[in-house]
Length: 76
Image 1 (cartoon, one colour):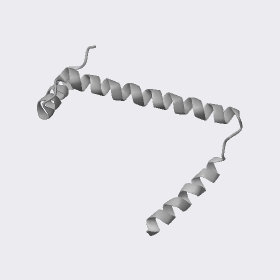
Image 2 (cartoon, one colour; image 1 turned 45 degrees about the vertical axis):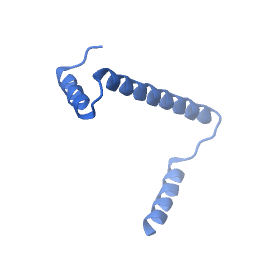
Image 3 (cartoon, one colour; image 1 turned 30 degrees about the vertical axis):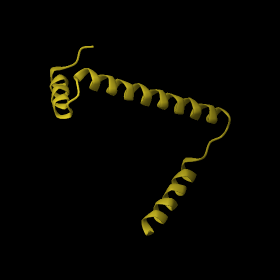
Image 4 (tube, one colour; image 1 turned 135 degrees about the horizontal axis):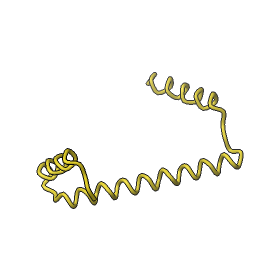
């Protein structure tokens, strides 16, 4: 894969700071990216299935719920 000079320089600095090879850092970054994207896609599919199944809440209801939780948490 080709990367910009700026990204390459950042990768080089990170490799020096961590004592890890650039290839190891790239593999870790790709692994994390692929795992996060797969998790996101799965969550979207789950949400769409819930929506199709009628398992939804009105925005205002969700907002009120989180406002109450935030108020309870901030009082502690």
